[in-house]
Image 1: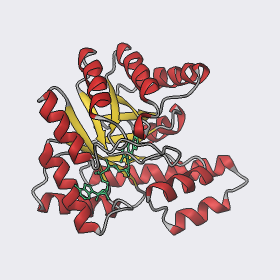
Image 2 (image 1 turned 135 degrees about the vertical axis):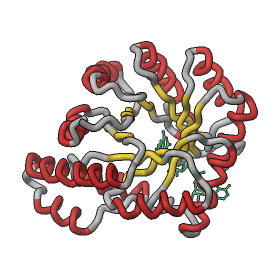
Image 3 (image 1 turned 60 degrees about the vertical axis):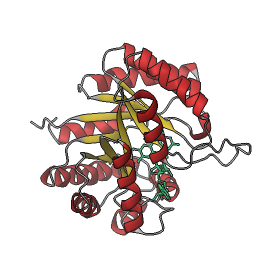
Image 4 (image 1 turned 180 degrees about the vertical axis):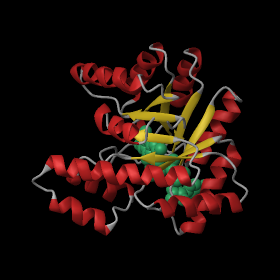
Length: 277
Ligand code: FAD
């Protein structure tokens, strides 16, 4: 039996029907007793109201909800309003991000540029009310000048007051091991939770990976292509790959797992069952 802390990520559905379906998935995953459910936030405030409502609704059900908050294209004033709402609702943790600016937004606020500025802003205005979790990139953020500069930029967020990090997803445990080792050499001691993306659909995974700079190793890509017309075989293969990744991460003393659930309980549950959570 594995007892590491786990958390699950949801994105806010756009329709009431989507929210109802998500609440069913939430009820299934809540039985796993996660530390929290995190709810994504569309950069530039594109999901501000949807994220806020879902955070408050999920939080009211018992297991804490953790809002994501991205700063690019948003204003001090609007983020302050959200933070106050969250504080009043007893929310005590925030995933603190820069965000990827949606391409269809022209008239953007220019008050924040990087996530470390949002960490500083929250610490200045709210002291230690919130535990701040930031993003980390074992395979290097796609916009970074180089790996070393990316690490220095990651350290800025920690020095500004972040207490934990969740990584972008990856399928190569060596990248995580190397990143954590380099962090420790830099004196960064915060827990770094691997972000785990279940594999259930090749096209969607390839699209996400192109957008966020995560690498699908060639051998995995080739195997997924073999299963183009066999979704059940693809899912079985994906489950095996991600289970083995998590087992390797346990041997590397990962402090827990954050699952990008994509609002579906079953793929994540299957992994947890394999790991005997
Ligand atoms: P930053 O830490 O600001 O880094 C962005 C880039 O700028 C990096 O290349 C970094 O090296 C560089 N940089 C950082 N600081 C400086 C500085 N001071 N000077 C110069 N260069 C600097 N996106 C959303 O829109 N909504 C979400 O809800 C969301 N949730 C996420 C959750 C997790 C766990 C992760 C890993 C990502 C999430 N993302 C989300 C995606 C994220 O917003 C993007 O990856 C974005 O491009 C970078 O965000 P960041 O907070 O890592 O930015």
